[in-house]
Length: 335
Image 1 (cartoon, rainbow, N blue to C red):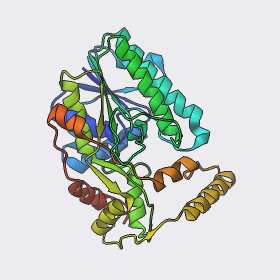
Image 2 (cartoon, rainbow, N blue to C red):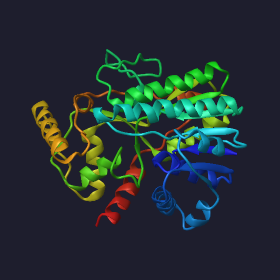
Image 3 (cartoon, rainbow, N blue to C red):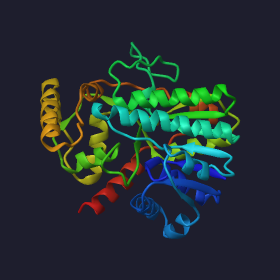
Image 4 (cartoon, one colour):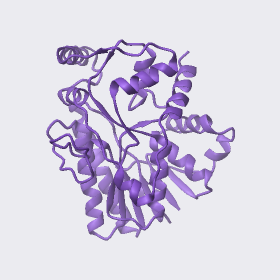
């Protein structure tokens, strides 16, 4: 039996679809019925038999912070994909981020060790990969620093430390560090915000850039790593390094919108941060523009994907088809 935590998120839901399509016996954690409806919607994007595929999953209501529910979920489990995480870049959420991302991961690792799970695949983030001082590409070995890191990346780094602790206790582990994941259905966070922004036809773009990858490549690499003899390693998952101007231009093109032409200046981002702080005070809505956010928007880090390419002879998919597919779905759902 395979267990997937975070089965109702972008990575988890697409991973579940891949596993059930391969007739793998799988169990998944969920917290609310509303989250389950999201998974059904994702399945429906790809298959006319979405309901049938959904019913193949053994769903367990629970939480990675709730030990009794984890004990139930881990029964007869041999392999675990740990996709669950809390995503926020708001400094005020740091304690919650640390509790879910670090403590929750510690709980998963402890259960794996206690119950003799054969292998754990942990989904981290590109934000825990260090930034090189030169123009070289960042690799899995580039030293990481908290400086300029956002709260989410800091707590995901702490989560990785829990996974490495498990490795020291003889648990077989692999860690994946995906770049910005392109895929449909989650329009309020991650790459979904690129589609949301592109649909509004804004003329501005941030000057920085990052690494991008399709959701299909993320889940395929996870499954291949889990099925391999590789253990005690982490892998950057990036198909292509792009500037934010390039990715927004590709998305706007598929949506029939004008590509952004004006580069955002530092003073404009600082003004946006001030407005975001006022909005947070007046409405209580979470902050989205912070010093670490601005740093990320201003700077470009390129990532080296050669490690996984060599380890699995892995060939990444072009981004174009996933961008078109996701843009089409976004347009249909917001027309």
